[in-house]
Image 1: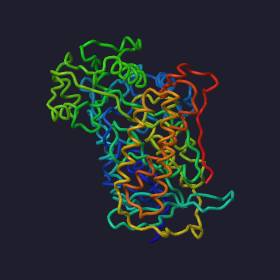
Image 2: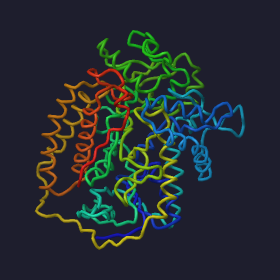
Image 3: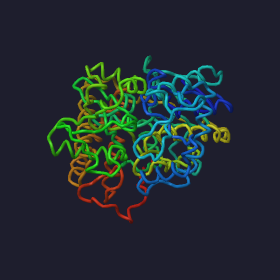
Image 4: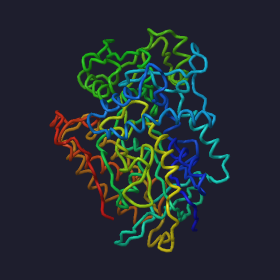
Length: 526
């Protein structure tokens, strides 16, 4: 079946929903949700949105903090634009109904938190469940619009791009799997917007939800779009360590309020690694914990907030307190066991400041995009800020997207594919990818580890491609295919960067190189 609209949005996190809200002023919008509409990485975001709202803070300070964290690879013009447009985005969220935590000592103002790498308090939050509040407010706005249609349990398979050598080659939409009916539809649009979030599920331990399988980056790469800086994958320093816990993130805001990282023997160790101690940037903290674990052989370190007032902890971090209590941990009396885990993809589809990619007709926003804001390491809470700012900009810019003739859009072809009778291949390959990515392409890398990952990756890519073309598509198969593609891009990029910078640390090349202070660009000529 063919469906036509003006704007097709693939993904329903903060970027996708914000874009839909603004683009709906200019035409009909369809938003694809891989599962339920409220399930996205955004919903799991705890910390907040970095924005300059205090008279004691400044745009210049936020810019410098971002550049410092990005280790020489941020685009200053993009950073300045994003930082300056942040306060307006916060006000517009409030106008949509988002409720942020206020400062009880200054009625009418917002409570501003502080996180690692920030020189001032500038984190706008809704207690410790900022993402849930953003999703609630944005979904309410989207559902009230007559120009927006949410298609839940629909997964994009590939972008529709005519295979011809022409300057007019462009994206015309996407092939989409209806997961409930197993039918594939062609959804055609003037502009196709990738807002699928990150790819934490490429790793064994991650804060990301199950939907974070790198779909947007993988689809864009397969159709020839330029991909940048995939070697820079941020590991959050503090995921709850417990045998039954699954990706429970312990917000950096807890350290911002004074919590201390300690070894299994109770020693505060962060000042051994950085003068900023527990408020060092995430890449430094994650490597420090990794080093402590390898040195001691311990399974985890501990985040100690027991010296802070119990009433304050329960009021400021109610969700973290409840999650810890679910695992019989009282954070007011016991240090929280934590380990690092894959958290945020700093690379992605290379875009301009309005979300345009190198493939005409295709746009990317949020974590799927590489705008130049994060450089080699994302500053805490700049992710939601980026999603809001560039979704706003793209939502305005797509008004100029041209009307298209969809005659060249080919319908989905099943070909000789048959139903699969050996789905165990999918689960086996997925597990193998996540293990070697964690072991060989994780927080600390080496040339030898990367080469080991490369050999395994080449074998699995061939196996997955063979399986994909033989059997009917399923959501599990599509996610495996995308994860394999993203893993390949991370490995390729990491092998190209012969230095250590930000989130990419290679034991064989431990210094930063002036010659390497440039983006890693990958492009497949489809």
